[in-house]
Length: 182
Length: 238
Ligand SMILES: [Fe+2]
Image (cartoon, rainbow over all chains, first blue to last red; front, side, top):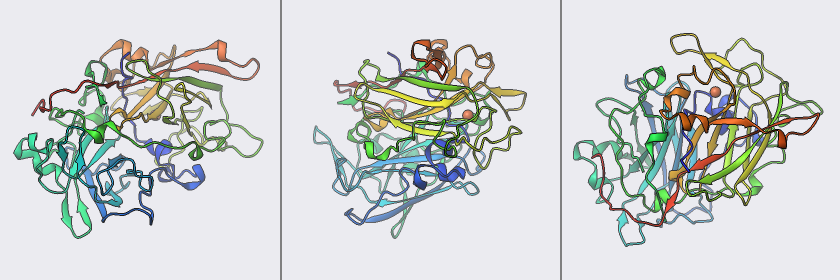
């Protein structure tokens, strides 16, 4: 069988995925993935934030972003921390924000270690197939980051300011973010 | 367990100039490919306690008590599988759509057609142990959209699908058999393969229709397959 073809999420993705952003009262007012943290979660609290820009530099004000990450120990099976979050970009500014924890390094079955990273998936009007990237917190070493051409590697590294980590996304242009087909 | 590389012959490319919104939003670099790791091969799971009793019934999940949404009553049902034809159980599917007149309940949609006070336009469900899903709704209307000409979307329902792995994440749209707008739509036509478009087209399914009540449409979904084979950890396209 062949994978079902993707189609753009369109400008009204909010209705289905983050209804409160559409102005729609559904699911008892709770948008899925809006809150990643509870008091039971251990780990360093961080705010991952940024703005998505299109090829003209304009903010992308209708995107939906999901992130998927390990817990502070690099695990994906923590009952206190799902590790998944979902936010819309701001309708005026294109800004997004996730309150989460800093993930730990992830050890693979073969012993390879991936530096702490957060997987990020972006959909919006004009994006035909969801865009996947990885947010890093420093420049490695990391088996994925190390293979990205050095000139583009910085697009994958969040800029730290205390608990705030800034990660701007450029869909196109001179500062184009590295996206992955993985 | 890892994820098989995506077969792009059945997927739209990023840049599709006839769909104008892609022009400034398509990355110009080819995406880089690496061997999926634990991060890509895992993903969030959602419990049945998440889903409310009417979440999968768009005919009543926004309606006033005793009332129902306006429009042609339909059931949409199908099976979620992976490329190896294995059913994907307990997968979250979210759907959203315009009302029968082609109007979305969204603060940014100002189309002339009126809102239906009894229709919200969103629903969600988990697939069962055999990957099956089913929901009730009304058939959405076509609507015009700004793309530089006289463009109308075919009637469609948007789908968001989670698999077992985050790399299987997919958003798509379902169309209806026989709709002449399918061939005319620049968004549908971003897909280069006619067979892939055909598979996005739901078929009337009289066998699952309920006499004097509601007709059914059949729509099956396929996510990327999961492989046992490891491939070389060398980046392609770099
Ligand atoms: Fe739509």
